Amino acid sequence: MARLVRATAERVGREPESADAHGRLAMVYEANDLWADAAASYRRAAALDPAEPAWRLHQAIAAREAGDAATALELLTGLAASHPELAPVRQRLALALLEQGDLAGARRQLAALERLTPELPVAPLGEAQIALLEGDAERAVRQLEVALERNPGDPEAHYLLGQALTRLGRAAEARRHLALGRDSRPRYLPDSLTAQVERLAVNLTAVLARAGRLLAAGQPRQAVGLLERARRFHPDDLQLLNNLAIAHQRAGDPARALAALERARQLEPQRFATHLNLAGALLRLGRSEEAVAAAEKAVELAPELAPTHLGLAGVLAALGRFAEARRAALSGLDRAPGDPGALLMLGELELRLGDPAAAAGRFTAAGELAPADPRA
Image (cartoon, helix red, strand yellow):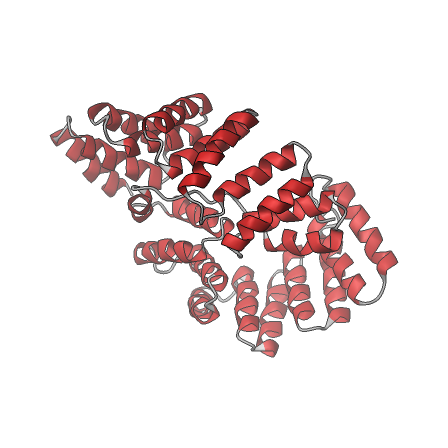
């Protein structure tokens, strides 16, 4: 990364009045999560080329990530006024206004966004968030049904729908949507710089963090592309290989996931996380006994850790071996008695085994440990 920053900065030194040079340096900083430096360079690019809205948009993005929400809001408000046709600006301004508690202002931006992107789920998602804040779960459900018609796999829509259904007392329906949207994050509309910024990510920590955000936003193919580019520079990094495998899995390509994990296992056979991920890939490929063996190997390598036992429980549950799965989940809970996820898994297994009273006890305990988690 240092070479990339140095080379890009040298161009700024040669062309100090070039907005493109400053903008390129800003993109390098942004791609690698150096937010304060990115904001400063975007500010210089915008001053040199005020007609280019992308510099100010990304200055706002960097300012927000650097903790300067006021500057971000000011920039986005100005951009929406001068470039009302830019949907990414409208979306980010609506979310910034929501964070400020300005529901009326956010609603105005969402109405404009709906006119610009009537085929996308972003405006209904924002309207659903407002409805939930206003306590109108039924209106939220209607908006989220529209969002899911436009994009059936949208994880944020599923999660918000699970929240709305929970408030309406429709717990069984809510559970499925909450599971589909677990760990979701907002999916931002791409703009003219988005693809360029993603290609400039070379700092491995930043790459992994960016890939994680893409996965959480339901964009596994973009995460795969980002991680595959990083693999050219870090071909044998075990964390990268495991994250790449997870991205391939989410993108529906367990065979590629398996190839990455086989390489990771070859490099470090004693890494329990690799075996857990292998179990998932093998399960998706229908290689059931090998999946169980991989999960059991993870337990053997790290018997003191709850995730290995819970991972084995998940594999066994997927194969319908609920009694064995319950025993593995109990082992996980013994090692992490305060883990709401372990309690939730155990409750689901006890339901499968016909013991709703025991399941209710697990769900109650999970709710006490994590009152903000609607799954319990």
